[in-house]
Image (cartoon, rainbow, N blue to C red; front, side, top):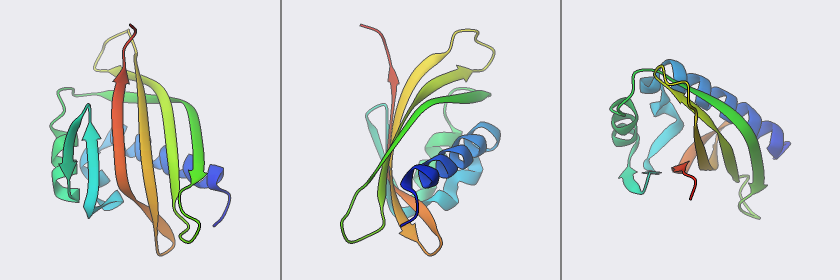
Length: 125
């Protein structure tokens, strides 16, 4: 496996740019066995994940990534876990929301797909 930090950065740059411009194009990053947990709601399969993402209740979104941490997730497969934190600007709200997201990336040819995706907004106590 190459530099996992570079792989994680390249993946997250692509993911969030695509999410922010055309969420319907994210389907190629998932497979039928992929699972998304969005604010605790589980969704499985590429089609259902994309359906969930495109029906989220906002028209515009912009992700600002603050941290990316990556670790290998298997001693035998070149897979990795990627943890992201950042800010979301939704529609025309001037107040960003804090989020965290974890991706489990599995190799597929020369690229990776998302096997697990866990998203949470982070609220202050």
